[in-house]
Length: 158
Image (cartoon, rainbow, N blue to C red; front, side, top):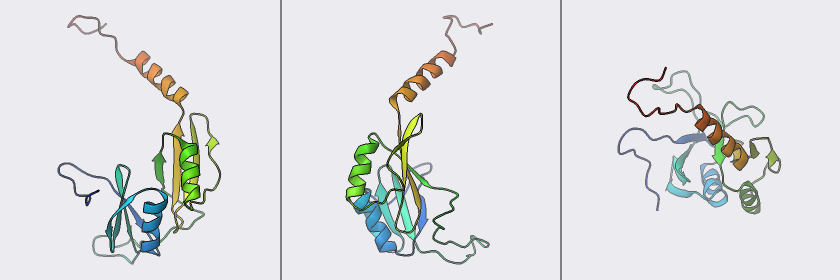
């Protein structure tokens, strides 16, 4: 069972979403994407893979954010989105589709990755991506070639 997201040391990153129907969004992240509802009030908190999604209503500016209004997104414009990395995009696409997820397209080959997008019930955009093995191998090879070579001495290389 997941616990409430409180860091023991350092920091912990969560993702906050504004929702027009908190219960509906909580069910989506739990039932469709496979998360676990940790707190089912306002805000609703869902443990999802290695992060937490915090879902709450929007609202006007407050003392700590005096010029910011929180609102559900415009579905045709976005400045950020949740990026979910997966091991098998086709499996995830089929599983989540069978549970009610509505993808904008099936997975598309974009060169170094396969990816597709869906929206949560409030219109928040979610990218689902799988990095191709060939791209990873190329990156590892490139990173190894760029690594400094140890000459076996304690003197700096020329």
